[in-house]
Length: 85
Image 1 (tube, rainbow, N blue to C red):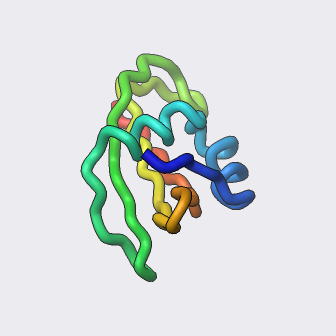
Image 2 (image 1 turned 60 degrees about the vertical axis):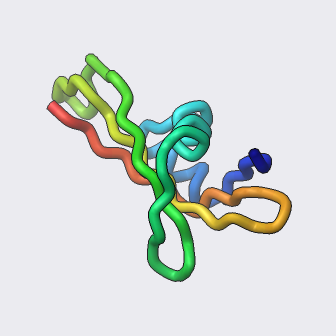
């Protein structure tokens, strides 16, 4: 698999939304890719969570990176995170 790079925007969103490099990388490497807007790709991976986020308890977390496949790397443009009770 190609190396995965993170845009500054993706890094900021990951920190704010609670996703790690490892989670995003695992999602891209192990989940099916789907077409996204503007010729990008996206995927979705669910992880066990079992903790609080912003004062509420959640059992699972879904990580959805949006990325572009370039000739020699994958560039993560943004990352969405969904917390599931």
